[in-house]
Length: 167
Image (tube, rainbow, N blue to C red; front, top):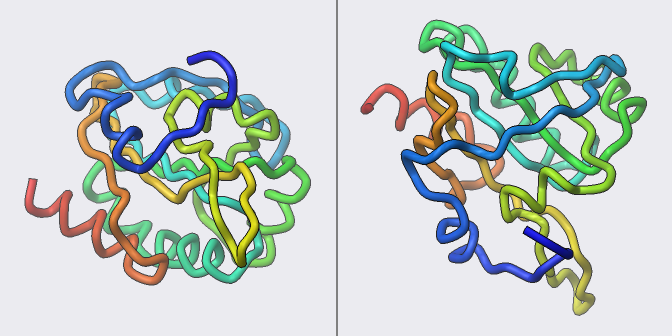
């Protein structure tokens, strides 16, 4: 994908094909260490994109995942949260909310663009480029299994768990 591009939620689904390899990436986590999608071979990975650490909606979503981590681990699922934040901001968010999963910094939004979630958004009459809250379930072989883009931040973890338990 070249350039910023302007996508709609429907185009996110069209850009990535279920059953095909998920875009790979390596980003810095909240400790400044590099983490790659390839590090999780043999496990399912929930890659969730969120707009900004420590905002109310993002905190609600992250805490739901935090509180569901035992059940996610039992289902062989790792969680990676990706936002345009810096590692330092992610470290503060992790510490303040006692998060028990990895957050990754994508300040240049290259991974966000690869997954089609960097889009034109409207908020209070203003238009800006930003992250459209979307999650991708990647299977044990690195292929895209499912896209979650219809949920509320407070029930995101339930939507994911319901899908995993029904699969």
